[in-house]
Image 1 (cartoon, rainbow, N blue to C red):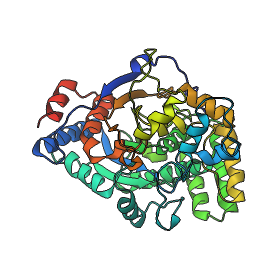
Image 2 (cartoon, rainbow, N blue to C red; image 1 turned 90 degrees about the vertical axis):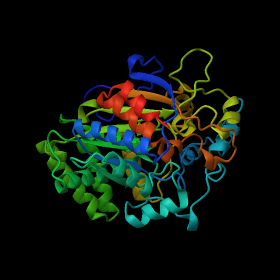
Image 3 (tube, rainbow, N blue to C red; image 1 turned 180 degrees about the horizontal axis):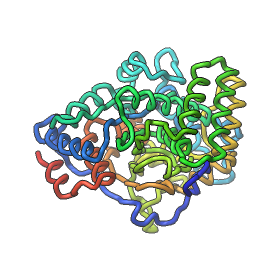
Image 4 (spheres, one colour; image 1 turned 45 degrees about the vertical axis):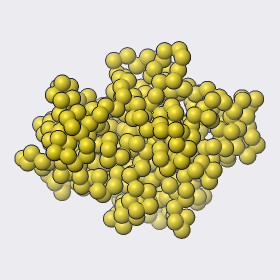
Length: 434
């Protein structure tokens, strides 16, 4: 996408990304919390600090209690209720498999649903109910903090941020405002500013929140920013959320002065984020997309997922081809807001960020099988999480593996190598020691 992207949707190009993409397999690493593991993590932590990173933020929502495939909008658009197969073999079975309540992802106790709050009680509750499946637990973040800072020196802050998990345009726009405001407060509190970097690892649709943030941070006066802020501010007033309106006012002033985040840069890593919103590379620092991917195509296009019906319905329950949430939660899918005020505001954001809609649009985007956005580096990783198990909680359709503790060292090594230029040979020797 171009500089001054102005909230355009990704072009979903099927062309070879060239040097921007790498296809690898998850390699054996030292056992978590072994002496060799701590040594390797400390090495990568030192490299991150040397690159000017002051903090790592682990951003995620919840798979449970949410319409993770966005079938509510497909249903609303006529795709599910009418068995809208368009004569495509296997499509009805796929849609049924995606549908909330039928996809094997259990509801949360007491039927708790978004919006979720980023507080200690919510974090502890998610850890108990969900574990480390698509969820950066408190234990995970604490372990990362200890291991990355093992060499001492300048401390590397590690924290966790649970976004609202409202899988629709308004929910992601509100989350972008809340996240940017929270990061601003963090920079002020810890005296982070010009010359410093913040690394955000964003799981799933949390990466779409960061795509919106990248557009908001564009240094030019783009037309979409006041428009998006206006929609969110109006929604805040109508829904009686004065704190959200205050956030919009504060960020508007800071962006107008070029003072947001005190001049610090955001480096972003997305983990299993669907290709939807376009990124503005001028608004952030470094950008890397990591996707759980297994090459099943017969045409040699290793950078594309496989989207063939009816085979995909057979492969999907055991995550045969990698991350199916990343592949299928594309334009046209979404959860549906509850209130009339939210529905109206969602429609306004929708017109800005994803103007085309409908069941046919979703089908078109899904069948393009695009793994890599148009901006940033892309790392397609076979995480070896396909064990043949039909139990969804073992893999969550390939979407859970990124946040597992066993993947922490591998992910950290690849992120540092690709964003901050660490020597591959040294990293390999450290990571693979028993």
